[in-house]
Length: 575
Image (cartoon, rainbow, N blue to C red; front, top):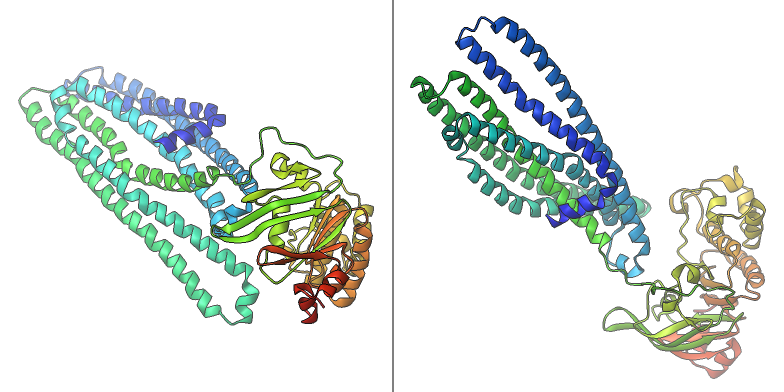
């Protein structure tokens, strides 16, 4: 109930459409309740052989035709406006979930599969449409019908009405039991649908690996298992629904049996007019129609609740990296970076960085080196504030990153990372991504500096070439140069290069390095690289080992000291 109330509250922008639908529901119900009264009156006149029967029959027939026309109009209005409100609300909900995903820190994504998250944004939120457009309106319709018919039945004959409704308490108990039993089953079905989407997303993204390693049969089996598991989970819920629906239908027919048996006895002994018996049976059919519909309504309701729960898990997720109430807006950044006793872990008890203290002066080029897994990329992740330190603080120009707005912080930086991500758009738009207002001449100049202009010029459509999903149509080196061009165009006071030339050949690396030498002038630059040529000219090299700073110095100083850095250069780790 809390979940339903929350959904109703969240959809308040569309209440006016739902109110229109509610008015239509009342009109639709009123027309349904009117028809048996007409039949009752005509039956009574026929039994009494009233001479005005022909005249009244024509008049009542015309009235009834008008009533049915109103009913059709009300059904249309109810159906259109409930779906109108529902689908627009679902669109808003999906946009809200995506907006929340953008605010969540990288910690949230550690144990999440992309397909699972996509399933929650699309599939689970779509289930909410069942609630707004079907379950809630159907519940309202059926409540109005049940209340209206109950009142009419007791007006016609209170004793027969009480007997005919004897099964209602059993139906209520059965419905409550069904809701408790079926919700976990539909929840499991939604979870398995999310897993299926996640597996499909993984396999489609990794199709090259599947084909290279000839794992077609293995992956076919895995996807087949996912589809079968989801199907059986859904069938378990539907099996319970089918049994529940059958029980509801049987119990609802008991009232009709009582009316026919006891009502016939009362009519035979003159205790009740035949016309009332006819009307009673018709109203009872209307009464039990919503009761028998409970199975479908309850199924829609539980499916919608299961989906809504998974959507709200994201909307209610704790934002790990939060802004303070009135954050500082960084302006005129010089690029003074300080790490003060910073420690960090992804998994508690397994520290990646341990008591790191480091000052980087404005315009200084600093290289981070060390064996794999010592925390180099984590250092950069903390500087971008994808995570917050467990202990210590990081400052830019003397401002603690926790006190700075995320937007202004990230506006101070240009990042070039090893795992380049390109959107399925043109080369021009991918390069422009960090500076949407950039002109074509600016894009071309950035491409020239990144040594990307040569390969772009050889393409049939040049800068208007679509790169494909994740840049599939480009080589690794080409994607890397596009990424560098994007960062060059962004032109920020702090430049971060995480294996920026790892995917290019030696000659291209030399050309890019020359370009970066130009770009780095006057900028604070942090470099992670495995090529000596890239880091040799750094103002200082920070040697990380086991999460700590083991040594700091220039290339010549570190080699002369004969420590870890000298060892790494000797074994050609930095060649």
